[in-house]
Length: 260
Image 1 (cartoon, rainbow, N blue to C red):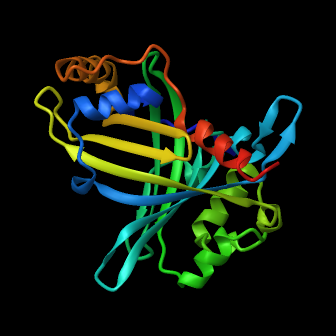
Image 2 (image 1 turned 90 degrees about the vertical axis):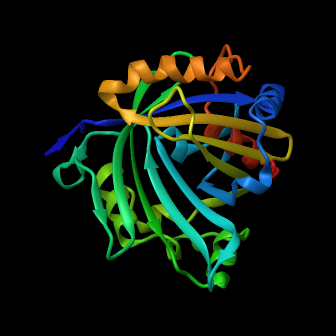
């Protein structure tokens, strides 16, 4: 029996693109050397359609993402793999609550995404797993060939994809890597907000996004939306008129770069 899960946490986001992202970064006095630098890749099976680039997996609400730290920590480069379902479909009973498996280094979370200025709640479920794989397997998965992605997925990723959206191993063989996206993330304490504020900048060829976010309980989300906007105004950053979904914009641009 499947059922739509209930989120108890929400991520409040305000996103800026292009010149607005540059202006916001300047106003917030962000310095690249003070943030966490990572490289991000996505997977989908892009195709050329009558209206432009189609992303079948993203259109089904399935996002597959790899993040790699740009600096070594000790003897390894920190890497994590995430499967996100957004909007989250009804899920089997085993996937209707948050789960953290510290022994196997993976975590499954259900939360609301609320992106300004509308802040419409969208239910999201994600499974993030820390991965220790050989560099050659990562290179293979990021290459032009197909079928190498499976080496980067943990068993819970495959279980979630099959249980939630009916995707099996053979359904993943034609996915193509999209990237890289260059990301820098900062964590800051703002006096108007009770929890740390995350600021993340994404850049690709010709695109730039800046996202400011804070995680709160769903009960506190509506008030947090007002506080975040107020805190940005205090820092001379005006909220954008339209909220953009950076994931779709970036993945579409990266797919277009494949020459479809």
